[in-house]
Amino acid sequence: MKRYKLFKISIFAIVLSLVSCNKEFLDTAPTDAGGITTVFSSAANAYTALNGAYYIIFKRYGGNNYGGHQAIMIGIDGMGEDYVHTGSHSRIRDAYRWRAHTNATHRWNEFVFEHYYELIGNCNMILDNIESIPDNPELVEQIEGEALALRAWAYSIIIQLYGSKYVGGQTNSQLGVPLVLSAQSTEGQARATVEEVYAQITGDLDLAYDKLEGKERAFKSHIDQRTVQLLRARVALTMEDWAAAASYASEFKNDYLMSADEYTSGFNNIENKEWLWGTIRIDEQSNTFGSFFAVISPNFNASTIRNNPKAILDRLFHAMSDTDIRKANFWEDGDHGYTPPSGKVRPYTSSKFLAKSVSNSGGDVPHARVSEGILIEAEALAKLGQEDAARDVLFILANHRDPEYVLSTNSGQDLLDEIYFQRRIELWGEGFRWLDLKRLEQDLDREDSNHKSSYCVTKYEAYGTSRWNWLFPQSEVDANPNLIQNDL
Image (cartoon, rainbow, N blue to C red; front, side):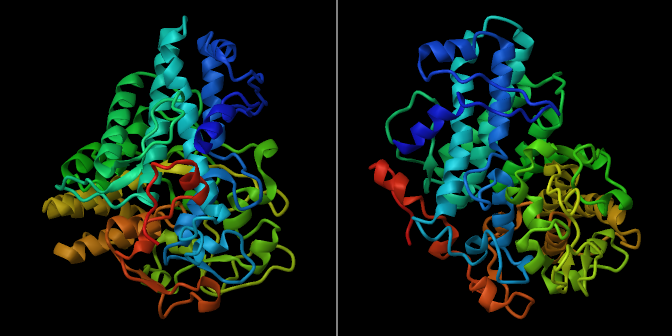
């Protein structure tokens, strides 16, 4: 099975560590029992293997479009309505047009599937061998906790892409994705149900939370217990388990929120205290034209930035208060002052994410922030009918971003819409919008906006059509007779 081959080779490849400014390598080892024994002969070796799993998050899969999870973040946001292409020269264009995920032979589709299952395979290899490590039980437990959390995180994304939506309070027997839980699996597996996949995700996260109790990570590129708590809240929200989502997210409203100056400083520094988890990118690992900032920033000198600076939906921009610091990251006239040489100036362009310089596309990438936890709690409380509490929680974030914001008086759907609006402007560009449209059963609506039909192609897509579930790559369907394809 093709996916198994991807699993098997990656953990033994030479890997570049995320966690140091120095390059740290895992020696190439053969894919046999002897090689496995070497990798897991000590906790230190196993920790380096764990670094290899984290490396996959930003690993480049060939061309510039395929820069790991960071590229997928851009693609997922680009499939929504809030992220706008202002020119025809574009990478990840077919995702924006809704053509990549609906084409079983499209390279982008294959890359996304390959990326997350390769990460899952590496985590499985670690978990298969974790009990054989003879030393340093505290570090071994930490490695196990992080591998469980990474596997859960990967599954939490692909189930939303390729599987049907989870519906709270139902059996959720609809088809999900293949649930591969061991690197020893060599047979093509059928799709597990949505319920089974989410049960595995929540089980992994709960166990990871226990394993990471009291463990201190050396770098924020690794997952710690607080990150697991936010991921658990995120998953509970997707499962429409409002009580659990509110409970898991309840502590984040007491955490640090970045200042206005920090919010407009470029979203490229993991040392920001509001970031719970992110990818650290040193210059040697920038991937140059394949990096996150080589697509979404306004200042790196790349052709896709010069000719297609990325913008916010015009009506979303105008809905923001002028006193909201988040509005300061978008420019109605496009004149943000960061345009690279010969670059186009286009309306509503973003300066939220800044590359290190016009010639350096480096920068850290956020995967989890405190503000998301606050938004999760507010939404879950509103769904539970605890509207006073929901308004109070929402006020903490909204007033911090906009000192003129006053406590909401909305209720019912109006209160939920206000929370969704805050979520859209807070998390723009961070890989959530299309996932939110799907979980909230909302239509894609790019009509009467700054989306141009010639660039985006798909202007409107009613929720519930077959296009809301990604097609599995045809290569996987061909290799696995048990894999049922989604409807075209």
